[in-house]
Length: 106
Image (cartoon, rainbow, N blue to C red; front, side, top):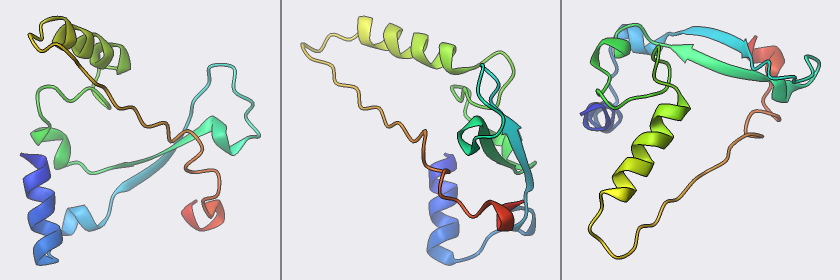
C-alpha cells in the first residue's frame, strides 16, 4: 500500500506539502557507544501523516514492535513454510551515515 503511494508520488513528481518537510531528529543509539562517534547516532525524519497509515506488520518506529518482533515474525514465517528451501537477504547499512555532511544536516 505505502509502496504504491510513494511510487505514484515519484512518478507524478507531486508530494503533499507535509511530506516535503519533516521533523528531523538525531537519536543517540546508547548501547555503550562512544558519544563522540558519528556511528553512535541515528538520523530520523518523521512525517506525521505517514504514521497513521503504516502497515500492521510495520515494526520500526512503533511502540512494542522493535526488531525483535520482526525477527520472530520472520522465524515463524520460515518455520511454517512448506517450501523445501527458504532464503533471506539482509542488508547492513551501519556505516551509511558516516560520510554524511552533518553540518548541513544539523
